[in-house]
Image (tube, rainbow, N blue to C red; front, top):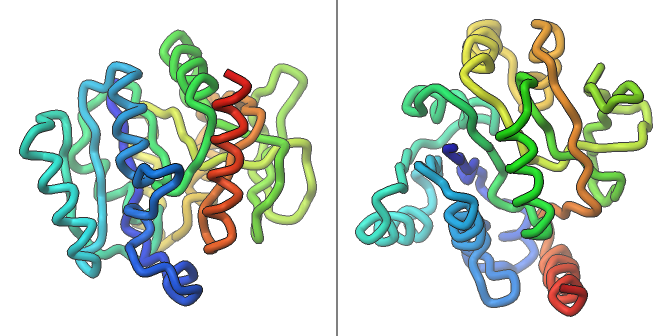
Length: 235
């Protein structure tokens, strides 16, 4: 399976709050977030890892280029895009067919849960498997409506459901015509792309995680470190 990372955001809120390094290089427990994802993806048997970052953060670009010198699985796109959906569209141009897992760079999760999720997605006959959580600590959560079998029926902005999106997307090449359509119609934001997946009739399954965090603010760094540290002691 291949993996992809959306790391083209500006991380403006972190910068405004005094965090000096670009978001992908923010360290959680002594490890840069993007390095953590790459390591975990390799642990899951990644055949290729596709990453997009913007051309406004040379520190991130240089870091990833140095990693490429010793890691033949890494594929890097450097391009500033208007939204994460547009970033996925750029990655889509170079990714091959087959199942893949796409994540945002600031998604923090338990490694054991992620590995179980990847195995479930590999074994699945669905068109997609989205990581979800009932832990809500997001300014604008994307709620996910499901039936009793956890088949996804809708993505909602304002109607509270049990689960919200965790920023981890298991998809395959059936999603490519959908992202192409979204771009052609002038849509933006990943949540609108996900809505289009349902509208086009793709079969999507929700996969619950116990907890997934995003690192959008400086205070989230401490939350993420505490979360991962607690799970170290549990494991």
